[in-house]
Length: 382
Image (cartoon, rainbow, N blue to C red; front, side, top):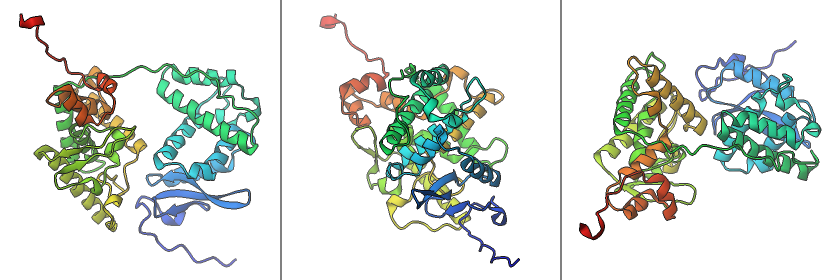
């Protein structure tokens, strides 16, 4: 048997992958740095994402096996159809990433019978069955349950219009009740965690006690610019102005220009320095356009994703709580969004000044974000 020519070594493939052992059917995309395979939907070849650039060879083998094992007519099959569709591919990147996470939750959920939810035939799924799933997940993770519910409603609606299913069992299901977490970040806790993150960033990556520089830089940008986590990780060089940083707010909030301060400039320059070192170490070219140069990148040189940021943050919190002595108490833990809230609260001036700094259009939103106890005088100055 004549052997074909071996693959040429691709320098853009992550270094931890032994390229001679890449499984058949798995392909590498240089553009978005993801692994994919080719599927045929109605005779047309399409790309199907397998994993991100941090995947191991074992992950690629497992993903291919799972993909090949999806039975026709099951919930997993319907989701595969949706994710391979033009409708899904036309969604925003952040929306697609969110749906990918929701699908993982669906695939991991196990019914009382021991059967995976993804292997259940869609014709046997009714609204009561779906309600029990959402109730079970929502008992401990209400936000995750509601994300899954919205995702499945979308998938079933898409499937009905294409003739893949006849009903939408997710329609009419009650959402899980979510707690309104409006944690107030204590100043001492913020300072302690920032110092802990900066100290860990000075250590060699993957060594004991090391913490990604992304953490402390994100903490500063979220607080100083009053940004959500997604707004932090999507900042690029294009947002750098001579006077400061132009924000990229979501959910209808107005963008603002946050003027430079020594602290803000230090965080921004640190991000650019770290990015440059990673790109040079990996032999990656610097994009010409400023909007193609993300401020925060992972160790592979790619843009930090929402799920990647969540993983880094949870690891950071775990290290802080398990340190000897603990950096903060368990009840003092917080998230990036809480730092945005603290940034708005700490903004000097009137409520109008705080609202201008946060970019909120409505006055009602300030009731959520402004946690300052405002001082008032007695009636008549008495």
